[in-house]
Length: 408
Image (tube, rainbow, N blue to C red):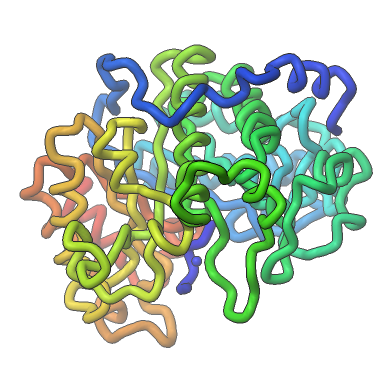
């Protein structure tokens, strides 16, 4: 998940995917039929539990199944101890799986070898054990990220990216699926929905990776896909936004069929557009704008009610000049107002006491001030902290201050 400063594919599976045919994309981008939105029964007090690069779990590769399980349960126990009620667990960090998927290989983060069976089911265990503790479990997926290195030959032999080399784009020293290809959108949706069919997850959660963050001096090479599929759009950027819109809409529609009542939430980078770019934008001067740089029209998804919750990553302190928490939170509250889409706020616990951060983050009370500021806004239905390691370690006492001030 981009939360640092800018933060075996079987024959049967192939047959299932090909059987979707032209129905893989649910027509032109349009809002689902009006229906009551699934809502959290309580204000969300959440934490992200990241698996990419061993950010939170497992602590390293090669641990025994028993040790991996013990570490996972310890994180769930930490959530309970901190009086949280929701864990957002990263189960598909790089086009792989933390459950026995017929579509994608086992994650290398478990055994050190992509595709090797770890001998247990992390997602199934997480759902069962979270629910036993009174916690919600949101399954966190990264739709398009394939690998943190650029060589497809280093992927498992059965990896879909090796079976379909035309699906991938090398960019910034990494591999991505090409969002402009309809078969790619169909595949990634099918792979994610497999987990929803198997387990009673409380929500499907995506973070801020759609088209990748810009890399200076590089171009995301989707020329061929644009030539084939981009007719009728005013420019490539509009076509790319349409591609992301389609994935969001199609996932929302499919989720309602596969497991009605399961919520769909997205946690984007905190700035949609700056006001100097668009009068509807926020009073910010951020270097990244999701609409323009990631081709993700996050404001539209809320206003059109395509999703059940939005959790923008407001990873700045109150008073930060380029992106002030105290200006961004009211902006998102106005976006959500009257839509029925719940607003949760992504909080940068990892910055508390960290070297190189603004002075505000050296004050253990900064995060508590965020929750106090949000308290008077009815649209704010909770906060989610990045991430589980800091929730447990709490090096400056910032999390303990939040619990004492707000979660008593």
